Image (cartoon, rainbow, N blue to C red; front, side, top):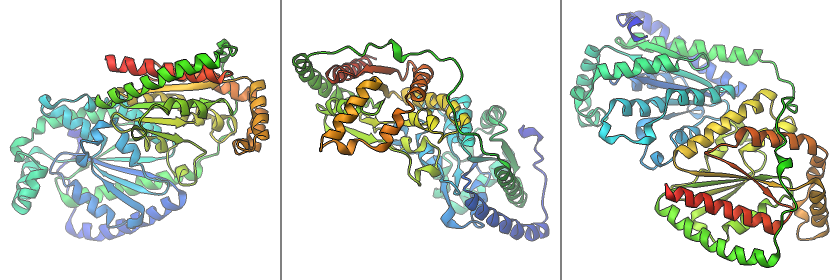
Length: 492
C-alpha cells in the first residue's frame, strides 16, 4: 500500500494559505454538528517516526473547541497499565457521545514497537493479534463510534532529515523521543511491519488513510480534507439510519440448560456452619497467595430476583481482607454511562494486580433485561455474546480468574421470597413493583438465561449454575467453586 502513495506531491504556499483557514472553519463546524448528533469520534495517528504527527495534531486541534476533545498518547503507557489487559487503557479512554478523542499513536503503536523492538524485552502483554484489534474496533463502530485512522508516510531519506533537524532544534528532548537517533531506527523493519498492519487492519468500518508528509503543507491539507470528508459522511449516515424494531426472544433453538439442575439439593444448618468456617478460612489464605502472585480475580453474579446473590456475596467475602476486594453493585446505566459503549463502565472496575472485583449483576444485562425489555435492539444483543466472550478472554489472557455464577430458583420459590420481604420491615426495600412485574415475563427471561449460558460458558470464563432454593447449599457451592478456581490458578 505504501509504495502506491505519491510522496512527491506538493501544495504551493499560496494554495495552502487560501485553503487552510477554510478547512479549519469547516472542521470546527463539523465538531459542533457531531456534538449535537451525539456521535463519538476516535481519530488515531500512526506512522513513521519523524513524520510530524505532532504537527498534524496541533493543526487539527486549532480548529476545535477544547471542551469537546482530548488527546492521548500510547507512548505514555505506564508499567501499571501494562499489568492490566492490553485494551484496558483504551476502553477507559473512550470518548463520550458527541466528544472527540485524538490518539498520538495507540494500540497499533504498542504492538508494532514490540514487533520491531528488542526481543529480549518480549512480553506476553504485547502479543495482541491484528484480529483482536479488528474485533475491538468493530465493537466500537457497531455501537456508533466513528474511527478515523491516519497513517503518516515519509521516505527513509526524509525521515533522516526530519530527525536530524529535530535534534538540532530540540536537543535532548528530541533524543528522549527518538532513542539512538536515526541510527536507532530501522526504516525497512518498520516499513515491513506497517505494510502488514495496513493490509490486515484496513476494514470498511475503520479504514486507513495514508497521508504523504514529505511536504508538510501537503500533509496538513490532505489530513484536514480526509477528516472533513469522513466526518461529513458519518453525519449523513446517522441521519439516514432507521431505528430497529424492539428486541424479541430469539427464535433459534437453544438447549434448556436450567432444567438440568436439581433445586431440591440442600444441606442442614449444622453441616453448613461446619463447612462455612473452614471454607471462609481457606478463602482468606488463598486471597493472600493470589495477591503475592499478582493474580487478579473477577467474580460475576447473576440470577433471578431474590435468588440469593447478596447473601452469597456476603459469605464469600466474609473471610477476605477488605483492602483486597471491591463489590460493584450494577444497576441500569445512568445518563452519563449511556453516552459510552455499554461495556465501558465495567472496564472502569477491573481489579488491580492481585485484587478481586465482585459484580452484583453484570455486563450480561445486555442479553438479559435489555433483551427482554427491548432496551437493546435485536442486532445489539445478538452480537453481544461474542463481544462479551472477547472481553472475558482478554481478562483471562492477562491471567485473571474469571468466574460467573447464575443463582437459580424456581418461580414458586421466588414468590415466597417476595412475600417474605414484603412482610419483613427490614427487607421491604428489597422488593419493588418492577420485581413483581418482571415475574410476568418469566418465560422470556428463562429463554434469555438459557441462551446466555449456552453462548458464553467458556473455558476461560465458565458459568456455574447454583441451585439456590436452599440458601445454605448455594452459599457453600459458591465458596467451594471459588476455592477450586483459585487453587487451579496457583498451580499454573
